[in-house]
Image (tube, rainbow, N blue to C red):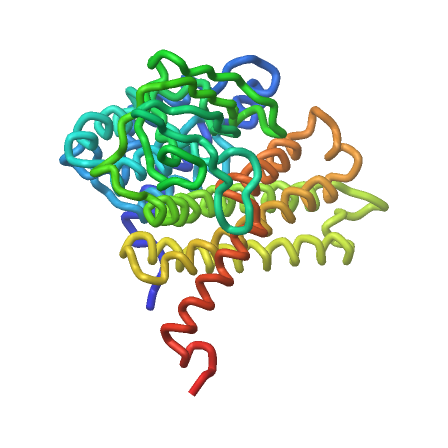
Length: 381
């Protein structure tokens, strides 16, 4: 089976890389660290004009109807430049939540706005740490009103649409997804400090806020897990792109930096660092490509593929971002060096959608479940 991208998808990659090289230099990302803007409006406007937010949204809902493979391509390129925009929150999370859980009226109302970039969406799914492979969730809906606090919420302060996970009546009640517009009375949004200010997060408090359940209002427990799997694949591609760029950055420096009359890349210690980084990245790429296939075909292997890609890409990006700093030596630790931009993003994405430990637990659960259904996979006759 060939998991590689098609020639048309590779052409999309080339176009995206050219556009981002011209419009999202490290200087653009650094301005987000030095300034107060939550995201780069010029870059966001540019990708909206290219219809990127609507890549996987069906044409009937205002998207361009490409598909998830094309969205994976764009995610990797956005990850390469650590783009300071709310793309993942809107395209991977909010749009996907509406697509898989919303009813026809809700899709027609909200998806065209997200697909065009007219509105920015996000999902409020977490309330601090995760327990095992599951979200800790205490936000409740009582008499049609939301009560509780969600944090951290990616791009929560700039979102025009919130998809909120909450339980009915009590903390042990049925878990559902609700659509909320931040203009509703009773919502308080506060920016919270994270290691990567180029992707802002917020604490969102709901005090008797009117909330509309997505779809028919049935339990969304399994749909939320499906949403997390789908988003995990796309975030893994962002991490893959970031790891690729950090490795290229380290390699170029090792070729140009001289010590004792020779490039530092000629020393065995540096060679081994870069070789280990390359191997980790290629392992992550293999897992990501398999996950892209599972996502695009909605295969039953998606939960396992998503967890595998998430784990491999997270570990690769964190390792390579750290080794990039080490390869640069003393200058790599300075504010003036761009190494920090990749390190910050690697640490932030490592906790997005849950920690690596929670995804490892999920992978084990999925493998055990598969083995119980198909004993031959576990070596049982």
